Amino acid sequence: MSDVAAAYLPIGAVLKNRYEIVREIGRGGYSVVFAARDRELDTEVAVKLLVPPPAVAHIARERMRREVQVVRGLAHERIVAVHDFLEDGPPPRSFIIMELVDGPNLAAHVARRYRLAVEDVIRLGRDIAAALAFAHERGVLHRDVKPQNILLDTSGHALLTDFGSAKLDGQLTVTQTGGLVGTVPYTAPEVLLGQRGDARADIYALGMTLFFALCGRLPGETPRLPPPAAPAGHRPSHVRDDVPEWLDHVIARSTSSDPSRRFHAAGDLVAALERREHAGPLVPPPATGADFCFACGETDTYGMTPCPTCRGRGLPARSRDTLVFALAASKRKDRLDLALKIGALFTEPVTARALRDAARGRRALVRIPAGRAAEVVRRLASLEIPAQAVPKSQTWAALPLPLYGLAAAIVVVGSLAGLLVTPLLVWTSPLVAGLLVLGGHRGAQDPLLKVRKRQRLFPAPLETRVSDTMADLEPGTTAKRLVADIVTVAQSALEHAAPGDEHPWREQLVDLVANACEVSKDLANLDQALALLERHRERFASRPEAWVDALSQCEQARDRLVQQLLDVLSVLGRIEAHGASGDLSAEQDLARLTRNLEHEVERRIEAEAEIEALLAAVPA
Image (cartoon, rainbow, N blue to C red; front, side, top):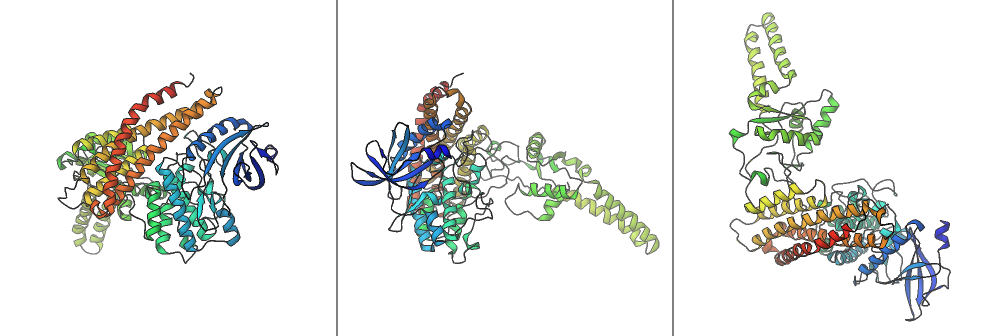
């Protein structure tokens, strides 16, 4: 702390012979903010003095310099204006000149008044969501939305400040996945897990901020730790009973631990707050929770069993000659865990009895051709579901031994009872036992997952492209998740369209999905480039500016691509909910996004050589 304290500016100090320090107004992790008077313009400004640790000072200054260059272009009434990045000394000092807002930050305001009125929270949410929408449209993420970075002016409106400052203030360590930055309680769960955040992480942070403004605290018991992950989001109505139902739902959607269940774009959040209505549709749930096709084992988009590799032709019953069973565990607790894992494969309700039978090996999971069974078994094993493939003709042998034991016990007990009570039991007990085994055999052949012929919604060339793209992308990556969600929502939109509707938006939608596949591959390449730059950072020790420059360019390009794919999801969601005819702007946006993605594909091809040159600059 002594190093930081030594860097503070005394009241009356003058920077660059222009900015006279008037008073201190706030502190961050590695920064101090002062109110200052601009002697040239005779006005007050805010001066943010950067005081990073000496070991990373040079890198921090270079990163902040580039962030300021980007943020200076964000001219919006709800974004605190950033004027310049300057250096002065000796001793060397780096500082940012910003607009001075006459008012407290949200955290201080809530600390004094406990919590905000509902109408004030709605206005605050509209203000900050509009600021984020403006920034996101220009490919700029905030990365540290929190009450301390929201300023309240004298008119009661909110302004967003400190874009990009999380990269400097270092509340969290920068990771090899590229910038785990932000404040823990407001950081999206996927970012805490090491993934690179996108616009939906900013939306999550704003949702948590609105929860804080309404309730005076965050959900959960420990304020300095992240709230518990909640796929259905956090509802302020559990703490405060005067929250309108629609606002409760909007905040819950914003704070879902699953990014695909949040608003796809900040503009959608603005619309929900302005209309005061329940949030729009979520991404339609997949047919299964697995990311592979149960018909053939190939990598699949969510909800596309049979996958495009199977060409949607379905599988003839005579070719599905093999059943895949889970291997039953010996202990009751292990069987319960196995049933839960099997249940996670399905998003639609499955009865407890069916899951119990599947976990005991009494019911098949799926029935497929023998040549594809090995891959499905391998995929299930990767999900910690041990399984075996059994030819349909050998199902009798696959039935668990306790079932045969029970049948034998019925015969024995019935025979003894027949000798002692009535001879009729001698004849009926074998029949009951046989019916039990026959029922078990027939039940085993009724798989939990039915692989049926899927209606072809995309043209065959597009299905092939989707299949190839999903096979090329690494599991769990942002690129794969986004293109999977786009395909799922696009299919749902086509499925819900009026029969025989030949509206031009259908063709535009197909083009959009095709271009999204190409952009997702570029996104995956940029993620690999960023990981490579992070991994070889030490090789740039003699040229840190070159490393920061390459990293910044890749990050900006990557954020722009992600935002374009999220915009696609936003428009497709509106079409899926209302149809293009019910939302005229959706059709216009569809055409605009199609052109943008086509342009992006062309631009990425031209820029590929430049990025390769940057990576080639990494010393061997």
